[in-house]
Length: 118
Length: 113
View 1 (cartoon, helix red, strand yellow):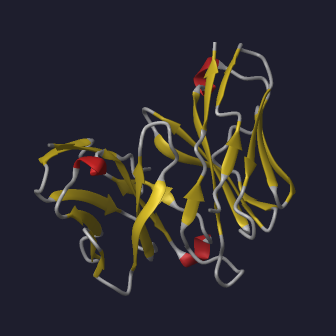
View 2 (tube, each protein chain N blue to C red; view 1 turned 30 degrees about the vertical axis):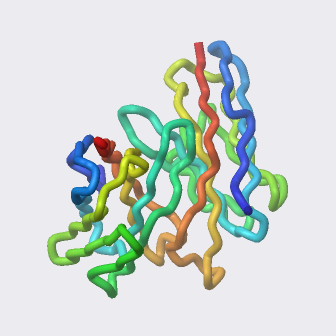
């Protein structure tokens, strides 16, 4: 039963601290997405990778957020320094583009990391 | 600029009746549309999709309708069951954007026994 895994599931931290969230995409998938869900904004796309290369991070606050894929089995989202307004649920999703060039297709979501910044 | 909108934040329906969820979009380039279902403390799960070359797609109790001229899609759940109580997101994408999807704000559905 292939699924996207995310760690940690919950994180409580203090303002100013560094937060790292991890995601293991489904084996064989070539696209990875980071989303943030807040009460006000619904699901916002933060970053998007295809074949480990970052394609779009326009939704991400550049000064404090960074996203990487050190290898095909790990994606990370880092916030440094964290602020209370970063409190949200962060989802990772992975997918497989059928033609390798990018065709809109189904994304499979992990369970999310609930972040609380005090 | 909300390119995908779900104007009803919540919906309550009696078990056995039809649930109709609506979604409007503004970007005429969208050629692929999906519905996701989300339970509390879980990630969204894929439910059903439709491409722009079709106007209807059915999967069991779930049917998605697409009206391209109106830039509107809807999800029908018939009959509704208590286990369908969840938040439903519509999402849209297009080929040139790769797998990138734009999500609506979600509609919370409550199915009463």
